[in-house]
Length: 127
Image (cartoon, rainbow, N blue to C red):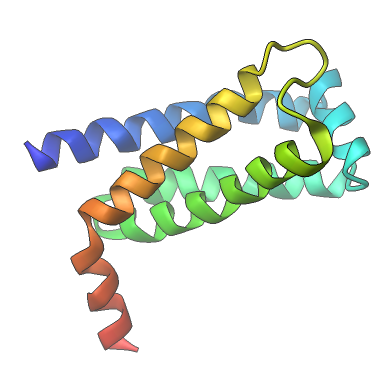
């Protein structure tokens, strides 16, 4: 059961990250607006897209899944904080869709961290 739930959670995060990459890498108006508002256009938009892509790849490969999970939690925490303190929940009349997707990624990543906490301790003891 845990194995299947872990896979479902990883697929959700990967699907959301990969879906938003198109908008970041093509310079979609909403992405440009977000990163302009944050004072990080275009470097922040492209860098966040690259980080999300790396996290997605790491999440797909079981031996590196924990690193992808930690990375996704970090990247998406920045997105959530940006929404809460700068952008607002709703961006360009999206009805809160981007915030909802970010919250979904955060919760899935947090659940994965909790489910695989023993791997975190293994990482710590190896260093």
